[in-house]
Image 1 (tube, rainbow, N blue to C red):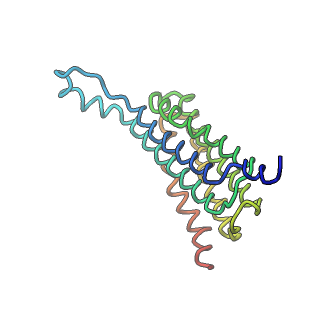
Image 2 (cartoon, helix red, strand yellow):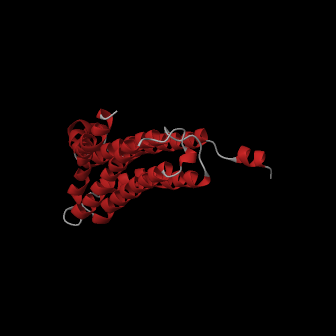
Image 3 (cartoon, rainbow, N blue to C red):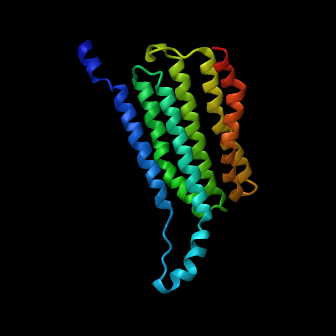
Length: 213
């Protein structure tokens, strides 16, 4: 195979981004399937439906966490690929392995919402989150470690900002795992700390990077 044929057979950056966008959109849509409409007779619906819907508050909370987390991961991918000019097989496979666990999010979200008091159920969600966040951390380190893949290398302070941002979710996922050993139902609330963690990181590392320009 000639050099030109090899170059033509490579997967383009746009194909990878298209696959990622499609999988994220599909996974985020599938999350709503975990919200099962209560089945009631027409005569009982007026009296019983409000209580049945309120009883689903755990499922709604888990759905919201899962949706917002997937949206955050999609934004992270967008920011990382902003610097990417071309992809190589390793970067493609990092994305494929990441998408495996993105597709699992509707399942882990649904089972943790249905069985919030069962440790193994919430552990599946926490482990899913930890693995996705770790893979994004690996991807960022790989991108910045291979200048031949980027259009323009991010400056060192932007790299440091990105690294610290990518540590927030894995740390909170580990904290959620620890909390689940004591009280599984409250462990999902750990993800409410993500905005605060990001704020601290932005103030401590990223804001300094912007002000120093």
